[in-house]
Image (cartoon, rainbow, N blue to C red; front, side, top):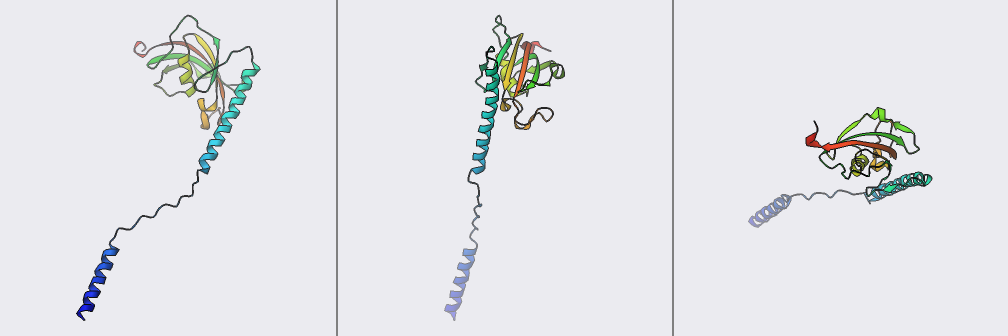
Length: 185
């Protein structure tokens, strides 16, 4: 009888100890195969390709205008070039400029009067990505027309007013002046 009690007690202790073991976490069930990401990448590639075709057709339809390709993925040409000055706006400068925005067909979306003269703290203020880069290419008193694909313009969301989703734009900018931040009020 004593052996049965000891045997029962040992079994009970072993069962107790084995049940105290920390439960193993269940692994999450994953259904993703990367399909969504792959489809998204393909959609974006097609979108960029279509926008570049539109921009290319604008460039080819105006052979007298010499468009330059930027390293950032947009195109531009000088309407008015300043051959005298050598300085460009840089981080810490305050740029004073005017601009207007057209759709890719040349229809005015926002006139220069609507957009008013702009004061921009270079690389310290949040503005249109294409403008952020484009202004730094300019010199005082230059007027440049930029062809911005949507990823350099207002992107997927548009401006939630007049510019739609994934819309390329034409932006004409006049850089009136720029000064170091510490020399402006």
